[in-house]
Image 1 (tube, rainbow, N blue to C red):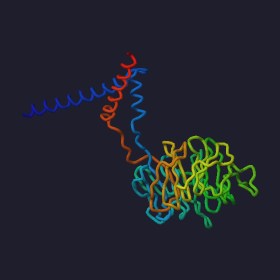
Image 2: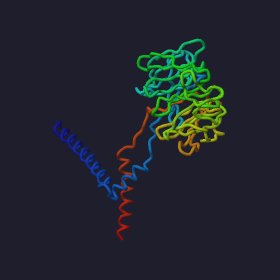
Image 3: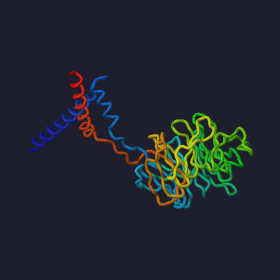
Image 4: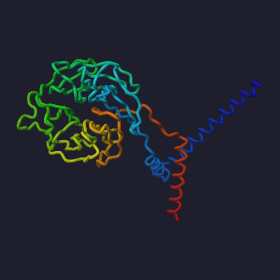
Amino acid sequence: MSHNCEEGSKRKERMSARKAAEADSALRRLRGPAGSCAAVAFALLLAIAPQVRADDIFESDFGGTVVNEYTTAGAFVRTLSPGYYWHPYDMAFGKDGDLYVVDFTNDTLQKFNPSTGAYLGSVGSFKGSNVSGEGISRGPDGNFYVVTNTADVYQINPTTGVTTHEFSETNTAWDVAFVPGTTQLLGTYATGMYVCTIIAGVFCNSPPGTDVFASGFANANGLTFGPDGRLYIAENDDVKVVGASGGVAALFTSVGSVDSGQYLTFDSFGNLWVTELGGDTIHEFNGSTGVLMFSFETGHGELGIAVGPSTSTATPEPASLLLFGSGIFGLAGFVRRRVRR
């Protein structure tokens, strides 16, 4: 009896192995040699197969003292918190892949593992008289640069926590961003009318001088550079854009859909996400056209936003890919036969 069971088990294993080999062989036939109709069909398959969104949205609920994580479909995932009273503001990912959140109340960065939501402790300290951190940008040196409500800029080493008071800029406010591939740090002017290059002791003097990088705003808030190298600025109910070398900003998307846009960022698909403080909503825009693609309400005012790897990414099963691909392969064969006639 035992011998028969073992034989039956081995037969099942051989059948499973044979089926796997047949499926692999079918996929190779589907892919075909380079330049063949099969290869073209396979490329078409990969191009039109539904893409799986691999991003999650992290946003700071300033009033609720938590960071919330959502899927790009607006589904709530979880909250992130250090476990004591704090006020999350802007946030950024480090080179280590962890999420660093500016703590407006405790004058530090709070660190989280974005994959598990685990709290990893506080990093750095920019305590001072009435000092509270607001905007953050990761520099090309891997350090974080935080602008405070007192118009100071602090550099924080994420590994050691060493904090250096970089600049005292009487007119700096709200947010900072590095020009890609450079050490040029930009900041929003206190009145919101300009984006300026931050230089020690010189920042958007009155009247603004050569340190002005961009103009054409009534109230510039959050800053981010897009995958096209241009600077995008949240301004009240609009998002504006200016070229990589600066200049007068143009309207990117007129919003009616954004009530007091705060911070903004791009996802891995090149789309733009904007937090809305007044309407308690997060918006997704086409990063090329500015067309509003999706919005979802959070029920609270948002400030900072960051896009990170999804914690629940689904991938298509090989069997479904093979089934879908067989249809494409059949279509390619039909086209080939028609051409030969």
